[in-house]
Length: 144
Image 1: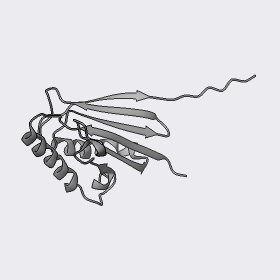
Image 2 (image 1 turned 180 degrees about the vertical axis):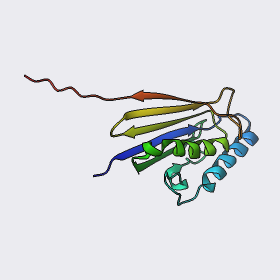
Image 3 (image 1 turned 180 degrees about the horizontal axis):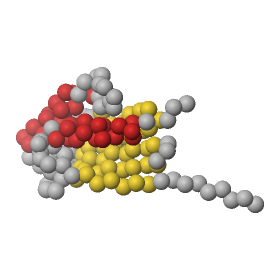
């Protein structure tokens, strides 16, 4: 069987007491996600990977709307710079406070990437900065 990689994460939108700003930012985020194609060249970043909860408490939105996403790939870590470029191009079009991507690989362990707004929130076309944490799981076998 080929090497499988799992990618998943969340984008946290901007909680706001200003109903007009909240509507504007959430509509812009929704538009950015819907602009993604249903088909894409590898490494894929498609609209079907993303899920946006509805606007009420019963559907998962208290103050912050949490956009979540996930996908399974064949060895996407070898094309990670391309995937990151696509994801960051999406983030540049959106309003958000933070974004987290988990990359689980069979050969090089788990990686977590974080984007956080230096101000109160990120607005479309603001600069991005990312940090990465790497975790590798090792198992030891004791001989008796």
